[in-house]
Length: 366
Image 1 (cartoon, rainbow, N blue to C red):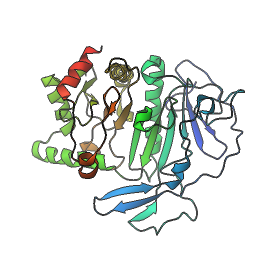
Image 2 (cartoon, one colour; image 1 turned 180 degrees about the horizontal axis):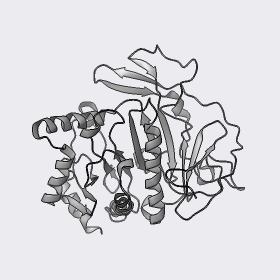
Image 3 (tube, rainbow, N blue to C red; image 1 turned 90 degrees about the vertical axis):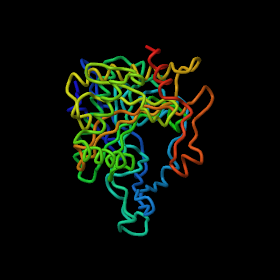
């Protein structure tokens, strides 16, 4: 039996690693070999520095050729068996599988002769990691409806991969997330998420760190902890208030449906969770996904992004605080929230949904 600390590790035909995480009480051998003949991996991604914003932009042209909405019979995330072409998962069945992306935005080693204008501060190889995390071997499954034991395995896999990727000296931040729905831009419909290990601290995190630092200098307290305490006391936007976690619609929500889920303790990342927090997380995470799926009558699966905000690996960890941002771009049945001129060009957000009304609706959906 594997565990979050010791998953089964195997190697795919082109040298990429795959990690199998088994549900508690299950024993699998994971001995199937990857028999495919695969081309050499493209590690030519570059990072360009935007001096106007102070942000890094990754250029990864090889991703233009990545697999796009294949048929169920050709899904590369389904298990391999005698009736289908070999996939990214050599085994005939699995619980949770994580593997290095075949079309990564960031690569663990640069490609020799990678194109670019130089290796100066404004242009350098995009070093890091991009992994795909398959939540189930069932092509039609939804994370919200998986058995609780599987959700525990998923939490354990997030923790395990965060720990290992954070140990890489080039990694500055680890981001675990799930995109669900073609409206979001998903190119594979099989239930899966991704893990990015960035070689820099992302713009969103830097903005939050700036605000957290100002708040600490003024009050001596954690900004995100004070936000959570305020939401729990006010209650009008609160959705869930448990022993170790609370969920609420943020007062300045940007998206038509947006939920923040935060632990009651001040902790920086997923590996810092204790056993009780991990257990409650497995329950409340699926509960929130089910509420989102029922938000609009007549729609069974609402498109969403579930994004874990973790502290940077090396800097400002005391200012950071673990939380989940779960949101949907669906503003009404058949209508999407587009990032139009104000949002895309100016970064000035306009939300059509009232956060208190969204919270009230989510509370109804127990």
